[in-house]
Image (cartoon, rainbow, N blue to C red; front, side):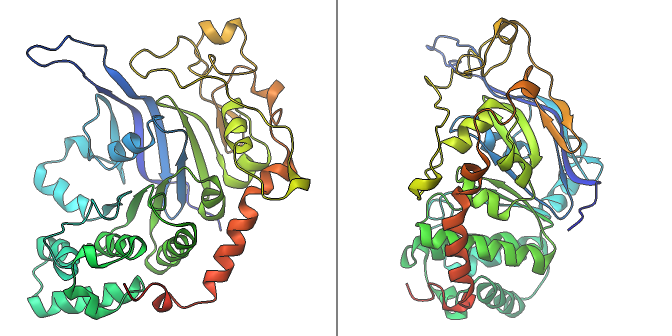
Length: 363
C-alpha cells in the first residue's frame, strides 16, 4: 500500500523535561530529560510504532503528540494546525479525532460506571444524540469490538483483561477518531489474547480508515502490524525506517541489540547475538555526545564528544550514528531477524479463523 507523504500529525523538535525536588523541604535536582529534541511525522493511514527499553521516552513522546502533556519546547502540528496555539474550545473539538488506548485496561476504566456509561460518555460530551441513540451506538460499538450488546449493563470488574481492553478500544472509537495512540495496549494481556487484539486493531484500521501510533515492547507484534518503526533510546529517536528494512538490515547498534534480544524458538535459527552491557543511564544526567556510547560495542572517542546527527541514511531511512555505514547489520543476521515474528504470525493466523464475536464473549 502506498501511503501519502503528507503527515496527519507531526512533532517538531519536541522536548519534555520533568522537574524533580521542588518541594518546600526537598533538594532541587536536575530535570529528567524524558524527550529531547525529537521531530517525528506520522503519515495519514499508516501504523507507526515506537519501540525501545523502559524509560526510553516512548509513552511521553506519544502523549506529547496528542497534547496530553505540555511540551517544554517544540510544536505539535495536526493537519498543519499548531495544537499549542488553539483556543480551548477548538482544541476540545480536535481531541475528538485524537484518541488513546491505555496500557492497563483495568486502571483506565472507572469501576463505578457501567460499560454503557463508559463508552457512551464521549458520545454524550461531543454530540447531542438522545439517550436511546447513544445506547444504540454503544451496542453497535460493543459488537464491533467482539462483545455482546448486553455486556453494556455490566461493570469493568466482571470482565477479563482482554475484554476490558476491547472496552477501552470501543471507548476510543466512540468519538469517531482519525488517529489512535495505543500506549502498549497488548503488554498487560496473555499472548493468545494479544493476537486477538492485534487482529482487532488491524481490522478496525481498515474499517474506519484510522491512523495508528503504537507504543510497544514486543518486536514480533511490531513487525506484523507496523508500516514504519521509530526506535527510541534515552529520550531520542536513533533510527526510523520501514518495518521490513529495519528488521532485515538494522543500521543503529541499539536497534541491532533490540532485535538480537528477541528469543528464537528454533535452535537452528539461533545466532551469536549482541548483548548490551550495563543499564540505561539516568535521563537526569545523560552522557555527552552520543547517548548510547556508554553501552555501544562500536563506540569510539568521537562518539563521546560529538552528538550524531539524525540524518537520512538511505531513502526513507534515518539513523543517528557516526559510523552506521561501517556497522550496518554487524549485529543482525537476516535469518535471525526474520525469526521472531514467525510463531506470532502463526498465532495471528489461527485467531483469524474465528469471528470476532466468538472471542472472549463470556466473562
